[in-house]
Length: 222
Ligand code: ADP
Image (tube, rainbow, N blue to C red; front, side):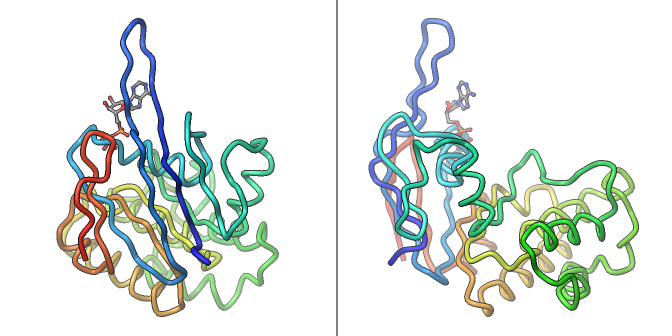
């Protein structure tokens, strides 16, 4: 069974009299352990797709199944519970609480999931190269450190599926390498991912690339 399956997704935005067709019939599957990149020009619908796949937004047409259970068109509370059990989400708006240290945010994720804090806390902080910054809050971090901290939080509970929007946008080469290392560890642990990216280097580490154009899948390639 696919971990994630989307059927014929449509999403329209209305601003005044104008209508934007952000998604026009997108179908895709992610198998357990599969790593998929979503690429496409700005405005092609990538962020809208990710929001629908994570259940943070509801499509206007079509449906999303998570591990064979319908995720779309459910009350938000149920969607949140399904998301918490299966998906780590990293959106461009970030996923860090301003008033908590990096260590506290990872601890919080683990506690909410009912998982032991150690050894995972130390492991994930080491993987993102932030062990020495464990007591820093988001405002004290550089852009690259914040990107790694966000990913550490999204991957804290080793979710079966990671959904991430531009995790390497505006990071330097060293940070990108660390993030790639984190994806490699996620994959080695059997994790699946669907990652929106402009980075060909990142896409080259995925199993498959799905290309979006004007809200449609343009040319899926191996
Ligand atoms: P991408 O992530 O590929 O840049 P988006 O999913 O952000 O694409 O946007 C797809 C299209 O939908 C764009 O034309 C964008 O302007 C439009 N859009 C996205 N979000 C909204 C919104 N909240 N209201 C109106 N239009 C939107």
